[in-house]
Image (cartoon, rainbow, N blue to C red):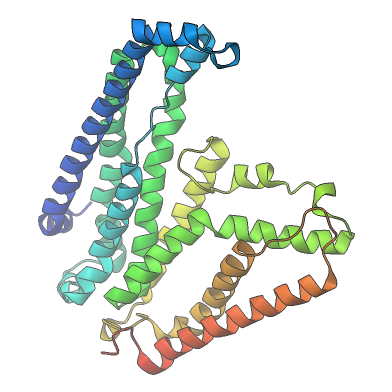
Length: 357
C-alpha cells in the first residue's frame, strides 16, 4: 500500500466521504426513530378502550382477533426506509466523482504524473470507498437494528439472525451502484453522458433487464411449443433467485448475494480496462478509448433493444402466441436496435460528445 497515494485520495475526497457518513447516520437514526414511534402509536391504539369498544361493535367479519392485531403490528427492518433509494444514487454519484468528474477537472494529468503505475492508482482509488461501503455503512446499519430490536418486542420483528444476510445485501446494492459508476466513469469522458449512461445502466439492470430478457425468452418459447401462457410455467422464481431483480424489499437469498458479487466484479474489471486503456486526449468526449466504439455500438444497441422490447411487450396468456405477434416483436426489436445504433453512432463518430465540445 502506497501511503502517499492513499493520502492524496483522502485529501481530495475527505469532505465527501465524511458528508456521506454523517448523512447516513442521520438517515438511519431518523428512520429508526420514526419506525419505533409508528409502532408505539399503533400498539397503544390497539390497547386503548376506544379500539376495544369499536372492535366489539363491529360486525363479526370485521372484528380483529388477537392474531390479526399481532400481524398488523409486525414490521420489517426496512419498512418505510425509502432513503435506501437516495443512497443508491449517492454512491452512484460518488463513483462518478472519483472518475469522470476528476478527469474533467484535469486531475488525471496530475495523478498519472506521479511515480505510480495505473494499477496502483486504480487499487488505491478503491480502498477508501470499499472500507466505507463494506465496513462503515454495514456497521451503522447494525447499530440501527440493535436499537430497533431493543425498543420493539421481538414478537413483532423478524428473527435477528436474518440480518446476517440483510445487511450485506443492502451494502452490496450500494457497492453495485458505485461499481457501475466507476465502470462508466472510466469508459466515458463526457460528464453529461456519464451521468445519463450510469443512471440508465443502474435502473435498467436492477428493474428491467432480467424481466425483459425473461419475457422475450418466454414468448419465443411459447411460440415454438405452440402453447398458451396458461399452459407453460414462466420459471420466474428460478430465474430471479440467481439474478437480482427489484432488489429492494424482495425476499432475499444467497443467490442474490452471489449474483451481486459477480456483477460488482464484472463492473470493477470493466472499470480497470477502461482506465488502463484510456487516452487522456479524449477527456470530455463520449469514449476515452476510440477502439471501443464499435463494441459499445453493437452491445449497447442490443442491450437497449432487449430492455425496451421485452419490458413493454404483453400478450394474452389464454391464447397461443401468433406468428403475427412474433413478427411484430422482431420488427420492434430491430427498429429499437437501429435507432439506438444511429444515436450512438452520431454521438461517438460525429459529435464526439453530448455537448459537442
